[in-house]
Image 1 (cartoon, rainbow, N blue to C red):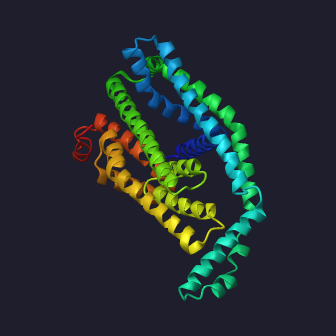
Image 2 (image 1 turned 120 degrees about the vertical axis):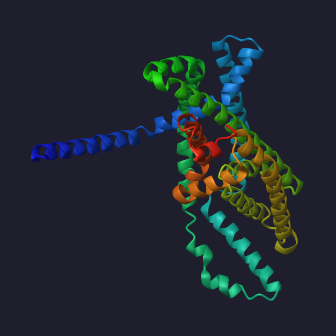
Image 3 (image 1 turned 30 degrees about the vertical axis):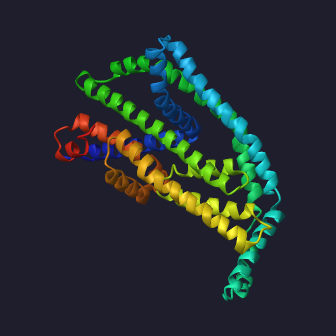
Amino acid sequence: MVTSKIIANGILRAIGFLIIAAVSFYFLYLIQSVLIYLIVALILTLIGNPILDFFNKRLKLKHTLATIATLFIYILFITGFVMMFIPLISTQGENLSLLKTAEIEKDITQLLNQFSVFLESHNIDSEEMLNEAKLTSKINFNFIPNFLNTILGTISSFGIGLASVLFITFFFLKDRLLFISGAKKLIPDNQEDKILNSVHKINHLLSRYFIGLLLQLSILFVLYTIVLSIFGIPNLVIIAFLCAVLNIIPYIGPLIASILAAVLTMLSNLGSDFQTEILPTTFYVLIGFWIVQVIDNNLSTPIIFSKSVSSHPLEIFLVILIAGFLSGILGMIIAVPLYTILKVIGKEFFPENKVIKLLTKDI
């Protein structure tokens, strides 16, 4: 028989659970920076595991020395990145007058006027339409200095974040066996083999995925740089790098990259004739970017998404599409790694399920 005391205890337990959950979420919110450091360090660890194994097994280095060598490679890469891009960013800021709002507005207005003249030459009455729209007056260019201040603030905290991530990564790499042995003590004996097998497979597949992703972005960066250099676009390294990084966002990223490249190409050629120089150059750059995307979609992407995580391209497409509808761009970015983790767990704990058996037959 259900008494009022039992009901009251149930209500109190539910309230207690909600309070604990709320406090836990608030605590996680407060330490979100630490969580980001841990996630980045985990990704670097997954990328660094094959390098560490190479130093351990092929070069016969001691584990600690191999860990230091792996971390040294990261430091060299980051140092080279900073040495290459900081001067270019400074030059970019001067050339495009990023700190001068009035100059940006003047450049955009000049570009719109040239576009208007081009349309008029083809008997399209657009000048009145553009003047009535007052497009430039509706754009608040003052957001740019504020945006740059945010960027500078982020860069100022970059050093602390980088040091923290590298420190955590060092111990993730160095003490991975210690973490596993410690986890064994917490795992129930009847589930130990399944959990450890899952961790091993997830580590293997995600390491391949992130290394493949880095390789894909490097290939795109080189190809974009070649395209931009052919047409003599200024600051091509920065533009190529930004466009390559945008490809982290599946399907939408390449489209944004093409639009960004087109806008920056037009701004870089201000002062030239719109019809004979700016428009043809932008068109050719877009063709070059689309050719790069064809190469990427038919060579790089299938290898990374299909081979590295052992999933069919259509399967990956549907997963990314669903994740995009559910969680937007962030969901699209984390869809493949998260889906891979769920597949591995499903295979280990529910191997007889027909759907899971079908989806994980290649794992």
